[in-house]
Length: 126
Image 1 (cartoon, helix red, strand yellow):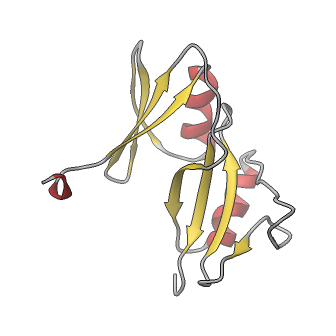
Image 2 (image 1 turned 45 degrees about the vertical axis):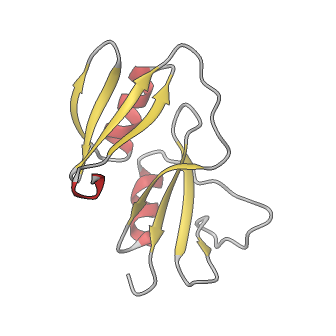
Image 3 (image 1 turned 30 degrees about the vertical axis):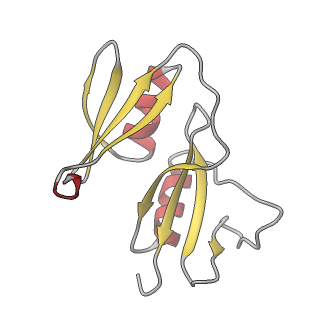
């Protein structure tokens, strides 16, 4: 039933101004609107609602991710815009913070201002 419906993605923020600046200017998402409840972005057909909350504890796992064609290019552009990519001692990452999974997919992680863990992934053959 829901397979034919659009997905709405959610994340949380305690500082909507910082979240808006990050998602709009660092990640390059299209700002749609802001009200007392959320900052809303258009992300290539998916509505992303950054919910305004009073308190928030980020989770240690990935909250949102994007599939990209050239991870090296995306990481370079995001880093130039101020993004900081995560380093994990238990993963063999290259000098840009990109890990190659056993499947051959390449993945890099970064956090938004609230600590939500985000990823960019280049699939095998992508």
